[in-house]
Length: 188
Length: 263
Image 1 (spheres, rainbow over the protein chains, first blue to last red):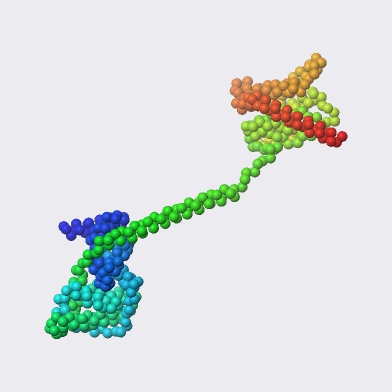
Image 2: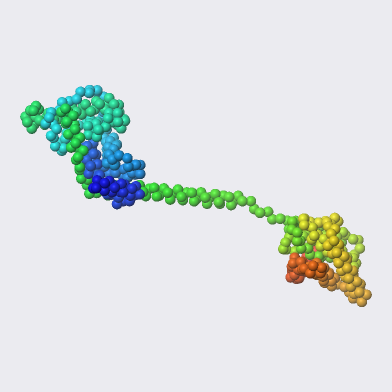
């Protein structure tokens, strides 16, 4: 019953927000802002800049809200808007560099790597170069395919694959360094 | 599958993570939304204002290029009206040529037909002048019967031979005879017959004729238009007299001036 009531409430809120009801818009913002800020934060290192991108994303979301046809998850629809806005923000204020070396070998992580805290994971992702980070997050976290990534970033599929491989290599190295620091060795 | 487990772990933990935005984040969003809404409203009003200015400009442009109404000549008026009111009285002039075309009234204004009177070498007697005027009455009255154009040349009057016209003609002839007899009587009495007296006799005869036309003894009906004409004639007599007197004086002065110049 709670799930149904929430869904009904969200539908009602969306319809009101389409009519430019400011209270409904604020309520939608309060429901989804925390997660959307986390999404933007995955792409943008600086928290304030991530918040700025999130605000821009919400403004665009409300402007195009009438295009949402209640097909699929509303959160997923908003999430895609936030990802595009984050990438646009990075393109506007940073130069995103992509290398074109192709290497599809998957680096080897260890069992212990799966127990890392989210903050450290974020720190590891922040340490990646812009191009690597974006492709890695879009592929590994958001679940986009290389073709979709290539279309959104206006790059080739091979570049997308290359970027992902390099991101994994860097992460692997970081994990090795972490294990060495924690356990004195990179082997378990 | 360690590599996949690591990345699944990342996906799971980052997917569940939430970060609380700052307190003024919503204010920033709300202000941007307000700006968007006001921009749309401004454009709407702006384009409505432009459309209104264009409409006013089109109306002004059309008004400026509207052609002015041409005033018709005042001396000749043609009318399609059936009920033409015709005044009988015409200025009595001597040795004067008057335009051939008759000036006829346009409803409801009553105008006087100006008939052509050929210049006669001798001063016409008053009897002759009366006859001439009665003939004008006759012709003008006949004109009233024609439904179309009332511009008539005296030399070629339009006469519709109807029984009603014949009766009217007969009545007019009777009146003419009466008038002539009356003038003769006045002359026999050695009384000077002035123009005013002749005019009065003519007016009386005109009223009688019109009264006869108005009332139909056979059907015991009264013609409303004839009655109206009678009343209008009486009402406008004074104004008409003034106009004619003024015209008469002006014409006399002009004639004298021309005569003096020639001499």
